[in-house]
Amino acid sequence: KINKKVELRVKIRYNHKEAPVLVEPIANKRLKAVFARPQFAVTPGQSAVFYDKDTVVAGGIIEKDSRH
Image 1 (cartoon, rainbow, N blue to C red):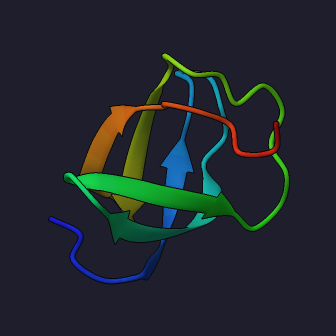
Image 2: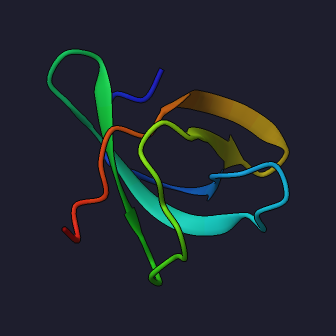
């Protein structure tokens, strides 16, 4: 469970290279993730899996790309 702002790595697709991300909890058991660098094709409905080194710490479905 992520209960404070934390730096992790995330994969947004199976063949996507892990990318650094700042993650913070928001309302209703949801997370806000901000990439260190813009990522290509962040798409609602895709899975996001968050890692701390080799350990999966969270995962979920992308709801929106806040750039739009």
